[in-house]
Length: 121
Image 1 (cartoon, one colour):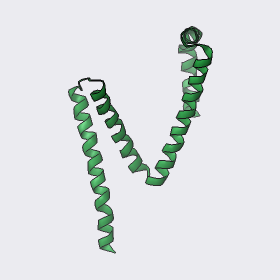
Image 2: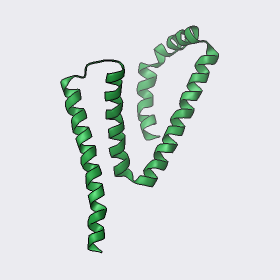
Image 3: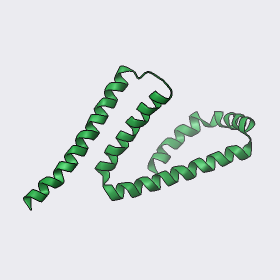
Image 4: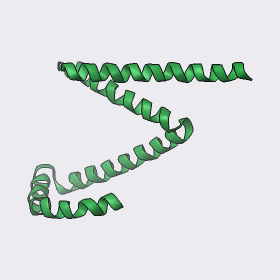
């Protein structure tokens, strides 16, 4: 709520003058019913995604969820590059390699950690 209240004045000042024109253009291009259906479906699926993300985080923990979310983003970048046949820039490849390596190292460390606890007991 705080972030909403902080950004609201900027939205009103910067976006409000262009809102009516953009809305009219979208309605003309897609139709009011289709536009409203897409807005409502987008909101519903975003809500459902957040519910699933919270449930997943509660079951596996925040760190694991964060690591897997990073891996998901890298996988999306790499797969998109392959599917759309776009060359990945050097920095993208380096960043993807670092993220994949970090995810792999985390998975190895999390597997080794329970084994160390069992030996101590």
